[in-house]
Length: 266
Image 1 (spheres, rainbow, N blue to C red):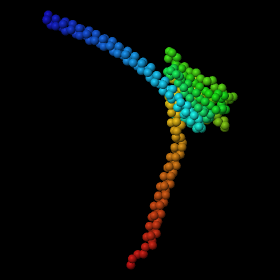
Image 2: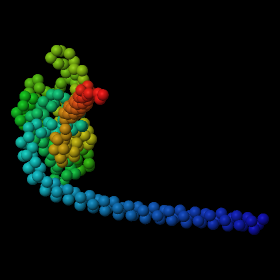
Image 3: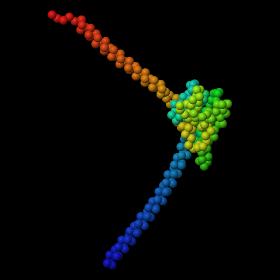
């Protein structure tokens, strides 16, 4: 019995030693992982700085091409309103009067601040129009040193009775009846909305999706035109089928006439 007891005690003691050794090894491993992770974080920070330098370099190189593109776009009437209407996210924000106002939009420019990370500005250039006095409407997005986002924009100088941001979502038509569908909130309310600058969807869409290549949205085919073309194709196919059936009928009639003209042998 004494021997068995000693064996049990020895086994328990050995297990405790093994556990302590394992726990020590785990703690040492955790400390080493933390050291390695610090090195990874340091490299990531270094990479971010290098990437920022590259972005700044190529941002400057792109500027002459953006300028040239703007000059060419200026030759195409209604380029920007068409681009916005064709964009699925932006079009959802446009009411009928917004579209009318955007027909006077001649140029859009996106400017990233020199260090890029601190923010950007979007400028909208307008011709003389019946809605507001401004020639340029701008909205800026900033990140301060602590990383808190903020925004500011041009105050729109609306002409008398033309403030689209004050229009009811259910406007009345000439007959005095309410429209059958609700208009979205005016696109121009975006210039006065600074509630959540860090999650400004429209600003991000214009900067990251539309501005890099607006032509892809300008060239999106009109769905109504596509449907009309599809209907025309269907009509043409129907006419071709009718013509083919008519030709077959004519052929059968001709065969019948030939049969009538045959002389039976004696």
